[in-house]
Length: 603
Image (cartoon, rainbow, N blue to C red; front, side, top):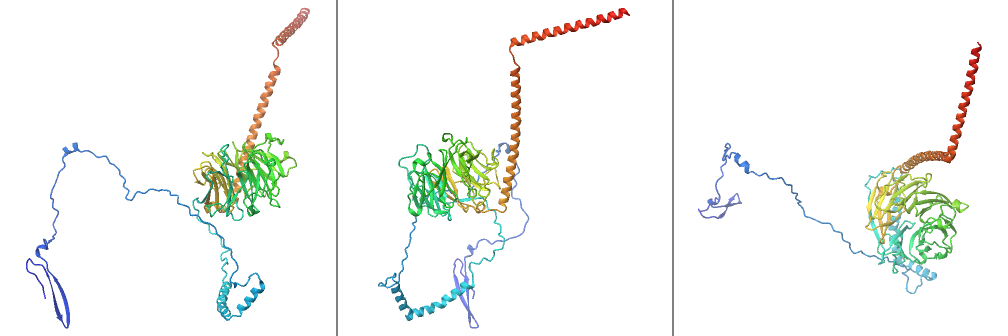
């Protein structure tokens, strides 16, 4: 059925038809003809020009050329970066004391007979037997599984280690340990605990002359590197600690040097008070800038250095007075008034008789402890820097080469060459305050500066500039220490912040052929310096011989000079002697002529 609509009327109709028992539904929609719009008729035809505007030359005079202008458009939201110091979440360590339990109230666990009686009673219980039988199969399965599979087996022991992709040098801050006191003090020394390096001992002191306050704290602290909220232990000296050192043989004992010159010894198992400390009469007269444990059978020997010009040896079991003393007098006379103040100290356990001292005057003094006389203990000196030597350390892999830091440079020396260093950094814009070698990579060392920058140097990679420079803080950095695994570095600042940094694997893992390459470099630089030193020695000898010749000539001239009257008398006598000699010569000539004339007349 078809549907339709009358003109001017819109509507719809539904109709249905049946075909062989089924119904078909058809929808028909109707719409006014006027709403259909004009019928579209498309056809092909050629292009047609609708309007033609020819150019008008007279309009060029009024034409103004627009200067081009670039405008950048950023199609994203403008953002800004802000730093927010969030509140620190403080944690506390809690311990649990486990007591033996599960016994009946009337049974004392300490009584063996009562516990045996209870065990026999429980073992006869049917429920206990059934529980053991049920759990036995489960336990047997687990035991067989453990015996069948060795979970600790190393399947690839013999395979070569694939070299890691060289990542760019980097470091990240792990933790910051801040001085908990209101008046902030300088971190003057850092020392890692020898067993795993999980603890860090930090010495705090104010070294600025006459700026120490009465309310300033004397305490130093031991920090757990995982907990920067509060120190794990407090050390209470009688005077602020300038240096601090863990005993490499005992992780519970420390020795420290104080601002007033005293030496103090701590055992952390016995509390925060020093177990022993030296008397003022037998201590240093100036602050103790460095103290180091010695390699000994007892593990109780140490020695210290101070700006009073003395190196003192101690036995921490009896700190009443030092066991030995050395005065750093370069004239080897043992005069304390002429002694050089010590600011750094170096001792290598593989060379037990030798040690080195860095002084305020820029000299490095090499000493031999086993010498018979005090004069023989000072072996030689190295004129290294223009000011105090703040760091002195031997290379742990090549002990004959040592590192010094003072003024604006870091220098590497060889024991055999005393005139000059074999390698030297450029003069930095800021003063260098501390340095140390990496314990795992022989070619890497670290330096800190007064502008708050930590520099990491890899001399095999680059000698003129540091491999990595990192701005640690806005304050001056004064101390530096590296963990034994070479991964963590601690830097101490002027305002009492000890910043813990993690170094990337490229700077903390031993590289392939690194030892042999660095040994060749040190040998090459040493030969070069020896050649230059020999050449300078020749030049100095030539200059000395020339100066001696000139002196001899001047002396001869001085000897030849006489009094003017004597010269006149000598000149007159010479003149008269010449005249007399000439008169005699002429007379003799006249006589000869007369004889010849007489002979001619006879003929």
